[in-house]
Image (tube, rainbow, N blue to C red; front, side, top):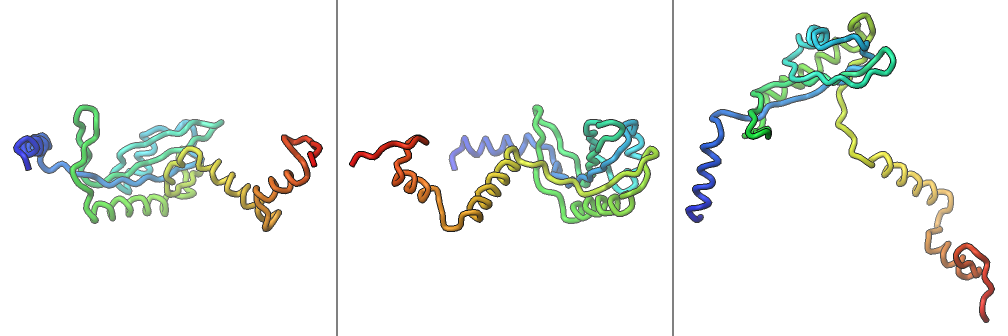
Length: 176
């Protein structure tokens, strides 16, 4: 290892604060939330199950909206020039703590009142990748086509059209 790379590694190690490390997070989805529900009401209802890192409010449709409540365990990340920096992963105990908080919140708060309305509490799902729905639909369409005409493929149809003299969708006379 040359001296320049050793010096670069030393700078990286010295630039990190001692003891900084990752943290565990898990989120719950809260549906059918009244539009007038604010962060204080959410913290009062869900804060007793664990440390809340963030509450994200979805758009209101009529008199209801949805929320994502994010629970956290472990040390919060530190910021370095606008980027979040984590040194290593959370411990198993921290993961168990945050998973337990989510499970308790779901078990005890599902179908209970928040600001006078019954709310639905579930595990939050990961966001979908763009185009995932369309890929699923095109795969389903291909499967339906294959089921409707078993044993036939695109090449079979092309060959049949060629034999029958179809070119660009028009019936053409064949030269002998």
